[in-house]
Image 1 (tube, rainbow, N blue to C red):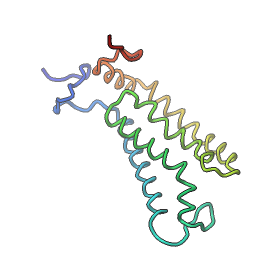
Image 2 (image 1 turned 180 degrees about the horizontal axis):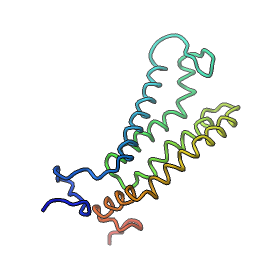
Image 3 (image 1 turned 90 degrees about the horizontal axis):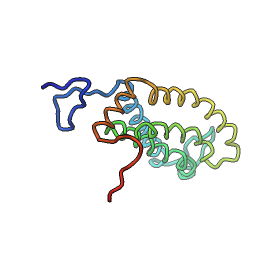
Length: 166
């Protein structure tokens, strides 16, 4: 019997075609790129001598690293976690995709600068449509919803929580 689109493929069946929607695959690549960019920023600040340009002024590397660490480290870890969750088809992948964007919206506030209020408002304003489109795609698109429903059925999760053992 050949696998069909309505029957989920078994985990060990290598001949079964991938049923992941293209948008989810693109999100995986986006999040790996995002996590890699964060690593490159840290390497750029950590390696070398002399000051680096940050916010239009030359600052020592250690000071620059201290100022970006509180915002970039959680964002990079969340981006890598979202890529892993999507790539490994975890049921908690949908909220994990939204976490890096939420952290990006509050990143100016995490920097500790007293003048971050305007940056925080502008960042949240610019990210609101992006998060809205992502929520629509992850929760209301028929293909993505069917994909996560197949994953839930394949794992035997009925949906409303975890079973308790007696």
